[in-house]
Length: 325
Image 1 (cartoon, rainbow, N blue to C red):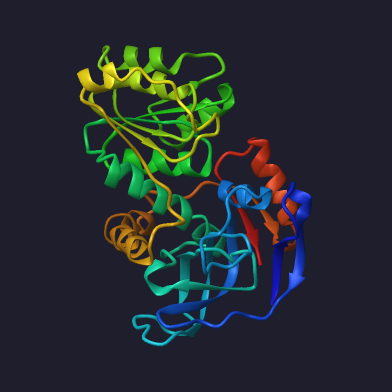
Image 2: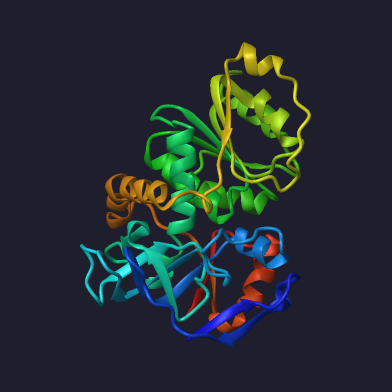
């Protein structure tokens, strides 16, 4: 099969097309003939040498794919060769074929292209488990997501809005702030020109927001705590401005806040299957009805993965970047 390999740690130029034997599905696994693969920030971190794959995972980059079922491993039920499928994979998505645990596979929603389907798993699994499971966001509450025009951000805006929350989103520049509102945010905040803490406090009558999804870290964390309402929940999924934080714990105590976070890739197949089951029940019907849809910014042929990574790292995109196979 054709695939894209990380030839050595480094910049986008280290991604090179190779040929490799097609993998075979083991017990409980599905072999997918890949039509499209999503590009995500963790792929860039893996390429740079700072996010190694978990034990037993493919060394090829790529955490989400869409395509058709090519073969079934022992014990797999509910799927047939030829079915349209999208999946969260533990690695190996940048290739003609990829293996996925059956529990991490979901049907391509009705009316979706393979490109749109490939843009679903990584961001929807991440947003669901962090915003709704860990953050416990409920209808009638308020929600702030940083990085509102990223793949995670555009997904979080839509899902939070679909489940009845008031949504705030930060982004760099007035055009990106407006893009957040076009996607569904009640208020896009240009963090380069506005203080997000002041904006959300003014908009909520001084109360603050109930849940914050943070991928910035560093000096944003104390500001997030200031922006949270009593009994607010702060969920960390990345730390682009640093993992170490200087924190005044007093407002955490007085406002009875919850600080939590998670990573997705190292979690067990059973945990990921449980997230998939929740998505199938709660979110896939919204996709089928067209109430939520991934925002696709640009597609690249598989062989141009390096250009896709360069675009990802430029942060000039709004929504998802997808490779076509």
